[in-house]
Length: 253
Image (cartoon, rainbow, N blue to C red):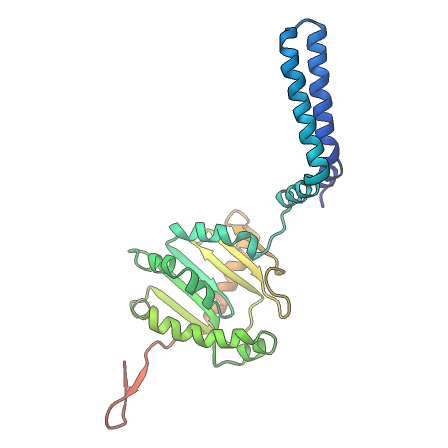
């Protein structure tokens, strides 16, 4: 915790006291020097009493909540739960979206309309990288998080069914990797990155997350290169389903 945050937190209980005392002192001084008319004093006293009542209410019932709220406002730490609402706002106007995940089927189900909106734009494009449902990496992850192995296969089927035409026209690029990434990324318009640390044990909301802008050159470059590198070692999703005709021969559909 920074010196400023620590000082503010330690003295939060005194801030309101000093405000009330200062306000009262100013009123008394203005009255003494006849700067304020005596007819306003009754109203002023009533205002002070109101402030004191609020003060005691805060003192007994709200002080702890106020301190927690202030600490949260001053804190630079966050998890995905803290920033997911802003993510929803940011993708409303997105034209380019890149996602790196383990098996992010929840994202594509929850934000399906927003994702399709991006793909239907003239210059809209989406790139997705996730773990190969048939690879060794997802099996390794599955030993700790069983749902990921199941979700990876469901996501592959979901994309083939609901996004097939975008996969065909090249606006939606999907890459499968056999590697466990160290972070989960969402890159919006190549200017904003939502980055969450991936862990083998702890789940959200315990995983630290942050929003990185292009002005933060070192971190932004790191995450962007991580996405590009993993994309280069993977394989494209095969969205062409093979069917058999009446004679038992395979044909593409």
